[in-house]
Picture 1: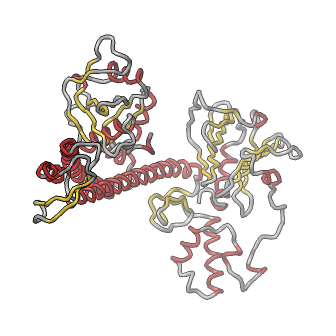
Picture 2: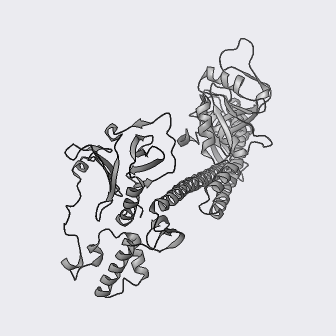
Picture 3: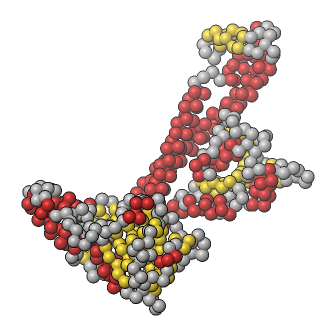
Length: 526
């Protein structure tokens, strides 16, 4: 409500009194949709900052302002040196007008959509628009003095709210607390007149919470958090805006971290389900080992070059079973290949079982964090940011690392994962940036990126983090399109580069192997 007509009509005379003999000495922007004015009377300074964003305007009067040295653009050069004579609010409108001694005017059009600033060096000059896309604003003019305004006299039986177009949702909510809805028409007119009188001569300014939003109100409605003197609209605005910005930041970060946790919980639960389905399929199909055993048990019955053979399956109550063969391959060779596949299948089964458990644990962790998030002190931005940092959910860490390091950088549960971009970059990562106790990963037996999980003092790398880093190593390798990829991992101290080796080539002295599905689980964050 701080951009509503009834507040602006309180603010305008206070600004006129405050800015008498003040001159504009700065006009610039250093953020998108921002207009900053600096004024001085030679002894004191006064700052006005207006955010003219399509999502909603915001006018603030900071007691001090430090202009950035970079990304700052001067605006409206003809405004500099102009001396303020008056500030006025257009009748029943959300336009604040600054009038200068030379006859120049600056209009702040504070509409909830399509806000703008319009400057005219002289009344006859073409308008200079802050948002040039709103060309119609060049013709914006106030109603001529004495123009009729909507009132009950023009339509005594009509809707009284339409007679006062400047009444917003706060005023309507206040009317409803006074029994507006069930009241007869004549009583409704009387209630509206009384509320308009309260708005024109407010007893105080109120910082309220209404419909989940923090508002500056001239009426005590909703949850009243602060009561401020009606004699000081400038002070009220200075108290309200920092509180509003803090809460907006809190709500935005709260929404972001909630969405992040919900997404991770959903992805982890889905991954666990896929692993369980694959595991069930493997456990309920005839294994490679059984087929190999049957071939070896019936070697004497298999003629050379046979395409298939029917055998007695002693694993299935001696039922007959047909086994397909490769004519160009001996039965022994076929059985050998099947035993190798059985070994890989056994590894896959163990990996799927472990993955399902890990992903279920991760989903549960995310749900527990969501419960903790709901219990945090509402509106406490500092507590929220400390909680995010504590649980490794702070995006600033990965953003800072991405700016400082020449590698692909990912953040997972507080651990930083670095991925080399090419052979030379791999050497740089492994030989210069990786610490001896960092965890080093690489797709086994193929070319690919070096991957490093940076250590955190006193903490071991959680299994879900290790799995996702291994998926990255597989994804950024020649095995990217394989259904499963073995990934080597070991502390970096067991990785060395032989003398004369080509770029990216290393020797691993001790290794563990993890079988994963190649993927980039951080694709959106990359």
